[in-house]
Image 1: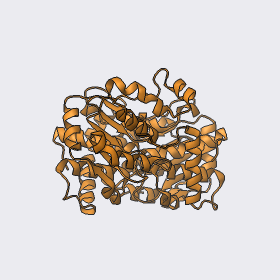
Image 2 (image 1 turned 180 degrees about the vertical axis):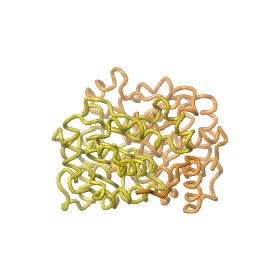
Image 3 (image 1 turned 90 degrees about the vertical axis):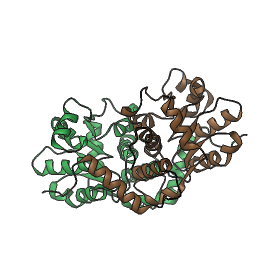
Image 4 (image 1 turned 60 degrees about the horizontal axis):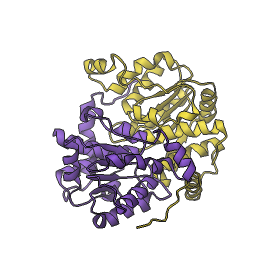
Length: 213
Length: 213
């Protein structure tokens, strides 16, 4: 039994992105936005989601500038944190899901742990890059906090996945980002997840390194 | 600004699975297989993938029996490992992607790190539960190793995602599992990833705990 498959990692990656370029229409996007969309498609294996990715006017510029300065990266869940490519960052991303007091506070208030964890984000929010890949409740709560005067991130990558609140929370982010004065990248609809959201952040980090596809 | 969304985590989960049951046809599957398919759908947000999930004859039974005995869980990448629900297992899953010698061996042989890491799986393979969510090359290499006489896992959850080799490696797993005498769960096509594959393993772990939807 012998299979015919490519062993070389850079050959695999190059061929993947070549195929993704063929299967998607990206010409209306900036080079940086193209990188994000291609990484999103790459991480779900579905070219059709390309049209669901939305960028606020200066999303990529703002995110890249923040990441260049070593801004904090705030993740809703550990899988997102794990998905950020470590060789491209100087300090570990933050995830406060299991921080002292968070599970207890979530139990007390009857809300999700990802929501409860957002209180711990406050000291890091200003100028940060937020990456939400799992929890619609965290995205809703973040929008409420910003509306109530919390410091603003430089970029919100909001791509929670699922059936309850995911599509709604992303639509709210997209509809309200101008009112709230925030930059965002989102993937409208039910699709999303840890992999697409960390891949989006990785795409911006790669832009800084000049690793373009 | 006030959003109307469910805060309670168990209410969110129950409503998610209620919707997934409505949107998918699962009646031909065993209770355990239904749990796996629902978790896969849950983690990608796409009901249509339900029909792409395939089970070998005793996949769930064999996987559940192994997990009950505390069999090693072998993951191709760290995100898959991170996705396995820790409260349901006694020992951490294994991922050898960054193990000593693996990156060096990958460079020497010009193959992917996930492939190179499989050498480190050998002492743990017998009766294990393998969870491959990212790397087609790891799945191909595993099939080659088993064909050449390597010990057999109790279950292979093979769900790599992407454009180069992903669909082909899963098709090979599905076509050859009987010849090789292995049990498997796979998601045919390009779709897959860390979240769906760890979710499949988590579904089996939940069956053991009696946490059924």
